[in-house]
Image 1 (cartoon, rainbow, N blue to C red):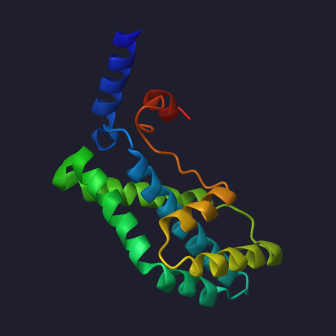
Image 2: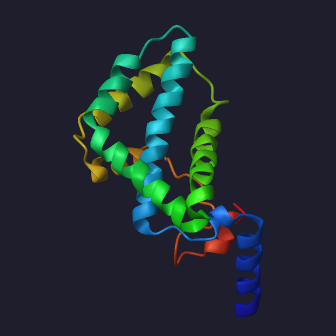
Length: 162
């Protein structure tokens, strides 16, 4: 069994060196905060395209949490540089963040979904750079980004197939 897991991890590493490492709790937290930011950004753009302007609420979220969002992005980039090297790290980071945005691209947009997103953005704006507060909001929204390579110690190989 152990040989099978090692072989699977080696195969995954060979296929995608960017995802050779597992995600620590700190890196997974950073991914969730980035996912929340991406969710709100994509929904804001979709609402704007439908004639519902909620950009003020999204911008307040970004201003109120600039340090937390920046720190999360820095941790994500460091993760990808560590697992992919300095040359491939930025590309791996870009692929990951693009995949987060693409996950929300086909969602339905309605007046109700825009109202909901506006409410979430206003609440998130009040978190004042609280990582725990932003994660609480991500939890409540069911945001759990796929972490290629999986979380450390939690069946990393099994999560890749998800």
